[in-house]
Amino acid sequence: MSDDHPSALTPDEAHRMLQEQPQAVLVDIRSSMEFLFVGHPKGAVHVPWIDEPDWVVNPHFTTEIRKVLLGGAVCEPDSPCAPVILICRSGKRSLEAGRALLKDGLRAVHHVDEGFEGDLDEHHHRSTKGGWRFRGLPWEQC
Image 1 (spheres, rainbow, N blue to C red):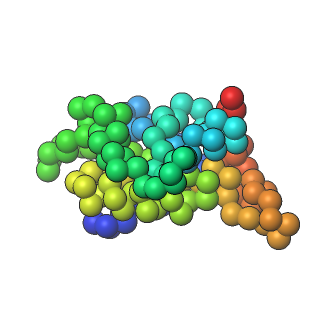
Image 2: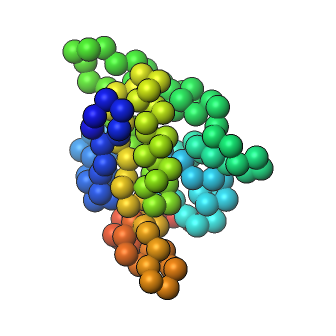
């Protein structure tokens, strides 16, 4: 992780971090429709980065993440920070959102580089080449 880019994790690395570091938080930043109807990782907290009806960046995103973290939001130089792992559909929005969190002072920010559904395949389908769901990690759907 650089000062302005969240560290990239594979879905398996993110899942392992969540198992090994109980203070870590997985935040699904997709729209409400994606979160509810496409499915989401089990245990993920939902804080949309961009959502309907206006499809603009959530101006309260960092504040909402800090509320999720509660006391873990403030990191002292010699103390550990609660890891924040962001996930979106394919890893692009989570990278952008992670940059915003780092700019706003959070330090332990990561993103799932394959996202929940992964990239499109040659038939324009997702969940066939990568992503949390493709890797067989726990997920649920409403």
